[in-house]
Every structure is written in structure tokens, then in C-alpha cells.
Image (cartoon, rainbow, N blue to C red; front, side, top):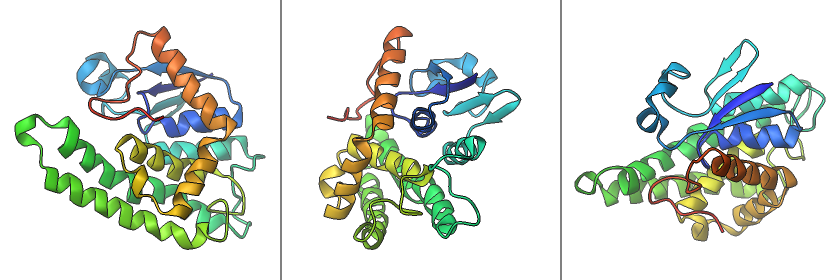
Length: 224
């Protein structure tokens, strides 16, 4: 049984979404955000104090995009994986890591300097600058999305899960209104997937059952 430690709509949503898309059984352990502060015992599970933390037998992983790649490869015979001999393999790897390294990183600075810091330490200019940085890099998807529904191999893959989470976070931050038409249409395709909806429902049910707030993080908007 796979065990996933997760906070509402945090980076750990990526592996949760993957698990639902792949139909793999799992146990979901919900934590209040940020877990390194709210639940000190979690540091014994993951010394980084961050989510995700995924356990699969002897396997222990803490990087969300890497977990997506691992789960797709673990199943193997799934359209969510792209094999090295497929034409879309390089794009698959590129966008799988683009979602975290290029799109999610600037949003973490928006979160910090607009929401998580104390009032006297918040820096609206920094938050706005990094929001613009995120949106500028997001626009690099326009050419491919003008011709394709998904980012690699002409099908939905783990790369779309990785990038899709960055769009979910952007929606929480109120940036959805600034998506280009192509990105907005892509996001609407992703959020209509049964796997996405099941993952959203799964975290909600688990949070309620485990006594964890269903609000994603302090000051961050729930999606509508």
C-alpha cells in the first residue's frame, strides 16, 4: 500500500492526482499547513518538514514531480507514461520538470511575501514581481497549446499533472484571470478530468475525516 502525506492543495496534490489517474490504492495522511510547524512529529517522517512524502514499500520520495515520474514508470503500461523510444519523450521530461522548477517556484515567493510572512515582513512588490515572472513563463506554453490539447505525445501524461498543479496553485492565488486563452482552455480541460475531480474529493474527505481544515493555506483562495 502506498502512503502519501499531504496538505490541502499543496505540491503533494501532484502525486495524489497521479494516484487517482492510475487507479492505485493508497492511504492519504492529511497534515495542517505548514506541517513542520503544525505537527513537529512529522519531522520524524520527513526531516525536511515538507509535503509530499510518499512511501511505497522501501521507497521513500519527497519531490512531487519525481514522484509523478516514478508512479507513471511504476505502472509502466499507462498512457500517463512516455517511453524513451517515443517521439514525445523529451517534451514529456521537459514539461514534467517545467511544472515544478519553472512555474511553481515563483509562486512560492508570491505565497511567502503576500500571505505567509507577518504583516510587517510582507513585500507586495516582490509578490507582484514574481507573479509577473510566473505569468511570463506560463505564456511559453501558448505555441504548443495552440496546436495540441496536451504537452507531450499528443495525450494526457504525468507532465500535464505537473503543470496542471501549477495552474491550480495559480487559481488559488487569484492569477487565473491573467491566463492566456490557450492556457485557460487547457486548464479547463485538465480540471474536468475524472482523476482530477476524484483527487479533489479525496483530499476533502480525508481532511474532514482526520480533523484537518479544508482551506488550502492561510489567505489562499479556495478554487470555485
